[in-house]
Length: 291
Image (cartoon, rainbow, N blue to C red; front, side, top):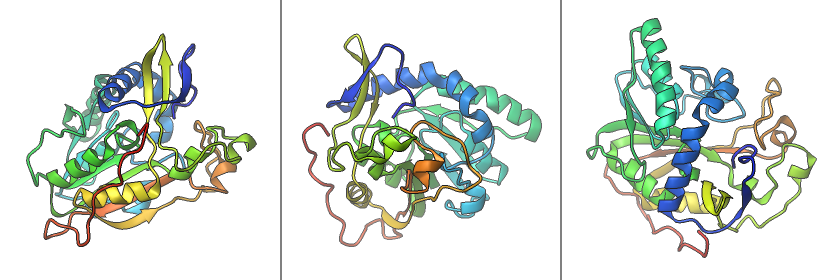
């Protein structure tokens, strides 16, 4: 969920389809890009790779594997901090995002990065549910809190990532842990009380003057596994980071208080089988009202 909502906006739960979700979130991130960087840029780093508010870094976790000389695609890249980290470690990486505002911020950081390292990261504006890349183009696709909670059809994102991966390639994504949707988005004690059903998949929306300005979609843990499996991927690891003692930062509904008791982030590590198929794969769960 957005950290505070826009001033004067109304927040709640109601249905939102793919088109209106994309329109709302493109506008929101276009407008938010500079403020987001000003608030979180120090924590994220300009060329570092952080998987979530807990502060788990790819340099320590190694969830992408060895990226040297590999072809990588970041979806929902924002200002492409994670892509720059990968480039520093020898990857050939492309960063993509739906938001032109976030990519402009990424362009500013790219210019500094090029001066410091002689490297740059190509930036592509596109919808991650309709990737404009050829089949089998990449060894790794990844996103840190990008795309997955911000699209109505996250199953299409899984299938698209699988399509552009070579057989044996890896898709890794972090997103809000599903359990957080049953709790208020509050970093304090009120955020420890169950307030809604874990199984309610109705999107969280913010709207102003009747127009949606922000949308997030909820899926259960089982939904996520069914989506990625149906898309042609195999789950090989699921990381639920614990909150480290040294991280005292509050970020929206994430906090040391809540992080000591419940997971706030889920990181899914998936592979595309060498055969291109997953044994026993099935279709995702039937969408429910409001999904």
